[in-house]
Image (cartoon, rainbow, N blue to C red; front, top):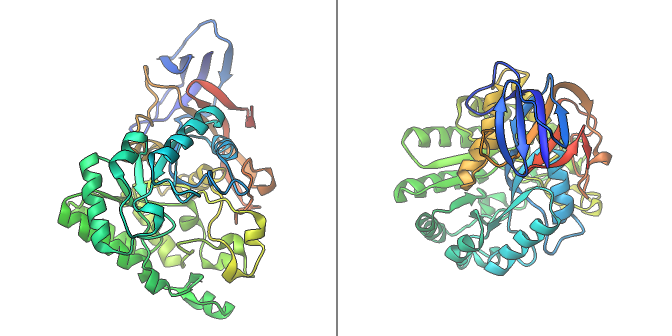
Length: 428
C-alpha cells in the first residue's frame, strides 16, 4: 500500500525538522522524504500541526501468552501497544511455560507474526524456569530470536550465577536485563516502607531492597567489563549509583517507567490496588531524582512494564493483590505531559528515550525516520488534551491508576511495517 503523509513535523532523536515535510511510503519502506511530494497513492494522511515520530519501542512489557491468556494475549496486547503508538515491543519471559528454550521463543514469534499488530521481540529467561538455579541455554535463545535475557519478576539472587549470565551474554552479544530486588530485604513487604505504609498498617519494602541489587549488578559489570541493563529503577540512590557508575565507564544502561515520575506512594491511599506494583511507588524525593536522572541522561529509556492482570487479581486485599499496571496506552501521553510540557526534556530527547535508545539496547534496527528504512511511524497531536478512560483501553485488562488523568499527546496514527493500524485515533 502506498501512503503519503503530508505536512508533518518530523522528529528524530537527533533533530526536529524546522519545516513541514512529506513522507512517501511504498509497501513497508519509506522511499522519499521531501518538502513537497506529489504522487498517486492509496491513502493521503494530512499531518498538519502534528509530530511525525519514529514508531515507539518498548523494551519491557508482559504479553502473558503462553499460559495467562485470561490476563492478556499476543493479539490483545499488541492491539493495546498500537493504540499507544508502539510499533515494536519486547515481551518478558515470565509466562507458563517460561520462555527458557527455543520452542517458546519461536512460538511467540510465529504467533505475533500471524495475530499481532506490532513487531514483537521475545526476551528469554536468564535461568531455567526462572528458578535462579541453572542458566538457560543463552546461545540457543539468541539464535531462536530472543533479543535479551531476564528473570524479570524475580531477581537472580545468586551473585555467582548472575556473573556467569553476564559472561555468557557478552559472548553472544545479547542484553542482560536485571530485575533488581533483594528478596530477603523485601521480607513480605507490599508497598514502599515509610509513613504511608505505617498509616495503612502494611509491611513496607525498603528502598535498599532495590539499591543493594543495583550495586551488585554495577560491581559485577565493572569487574567483568560486561554490559547490564537495569530495569524499572525507582529510588534516588539507584539513580545516583548508576550515575556514578557511568562516570567510571561501567557498561550500564537503565530504564524507568511513567508511574515512577508521575506518582508517589500516596496513590495507594484507600488501599488502591491499581497503584500496587513492583518496585513500589516511592516518595517525592525519589520522583524528583528520577526526573533529574531523565534530564541528565542517567536514565537511558522509558519503558512501560505493561503488566496486565484480571480484575479478580486486583479486587482483593492489598497484601494479596497482584503487582503491576497496564501501560501501553498512557505511556506517551504521560511522558509528554510530565516531561516535555514541563521542560524536563525536549521532544527530541523523548523520542530518543522511547524509540531510538531502546532499539539500540535491544539490537533492533528501529527508531529513525529516514529514506530506505522500514515504515514504522507514530503520528501524535501534542496539543490535544484528553481524559484517560481505562474502560476504553484495547488491553484485556484495565488495571491502571491513571483513570481520570488529563493528558496531552494523543496517538492519531500508528503505522507498522507500512501498514496502517491506527487511523484518526481509531484502531483499524
